[in-house]
Image 1: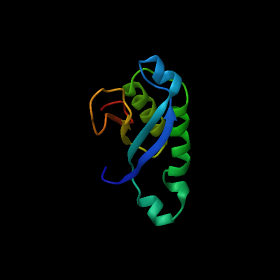
Image 2 (image 1 turned 135 degrees about the horizontal axis):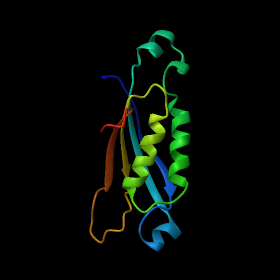
Image 3 (image 1 turned 90 degrees about the horizontal axis):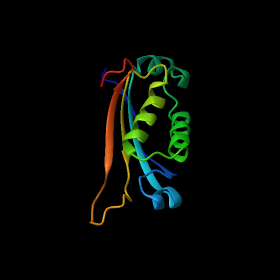
Image 4 (image 1 turned 135 degrees about the vertical axis):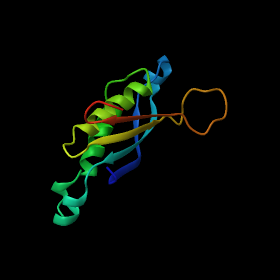
Length: 123
């Protein structure tokens, strides 16, 4: 599938991490979602009902990030990818969770986990 809808840089505050202070204080997480779907029907109809409403999807992703804490961003990425695949038109998702304030005692640019999931469960 060559068509993609991308939602990048979605920022929300969550309480994920393995350390008590991460759970207590929280930190910002940044989500990038690339959805693979056929956009031709939406282009032909010019109707948002024929594609993924990225505003609604953003709300759902933020609910996950701000919701139940998990230890690992791998777990968070998996949950977010599952939400994307609940969209009926999405055949595949590439989902990245960035943890820009990860508790690392060295200067770094980013920590991120990317998962690629298909509707059929294969990756």
